[in-house]
Length: 149
Image (cartoon, rainbow, N blue to C red; front, side):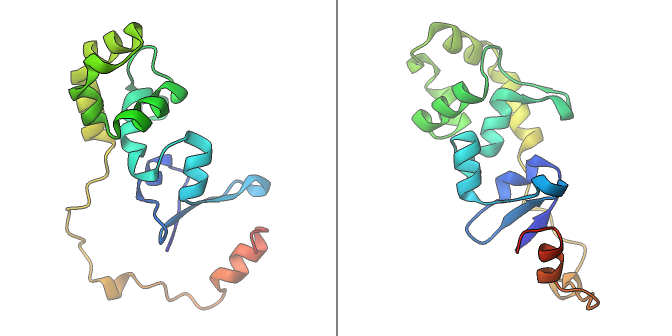
């Protein structure tokens, strides 16, 4: 399945069976687990944790002070999840990062609640109603037209 969106929040849904198409003309890319690992140094399942730590300017979400993308990736690779980072904050080696994480723990928890996509909501449609049925152009023709096939 391919989700077409400019919103990077959908990165947390990427799996071996789900990709995100970010159409940007010549810079169009299909985002896969390998893309997320290469770009951010994390697994797609860690993306909500990552954004909670670094913040998201486009959604007006402030992350932890002094925690940028590289530091967030290091923390997530060491502790696995935001929750584990918060539980083990006393084990964070750099004092300035440790203080930032502990001092912003409530904000980080709220960030996660806001950023994490909730998959428990019921769809207001039957799955069969969501099937793509437009037959005038195929997905392969679209991908070929934008230079991805």
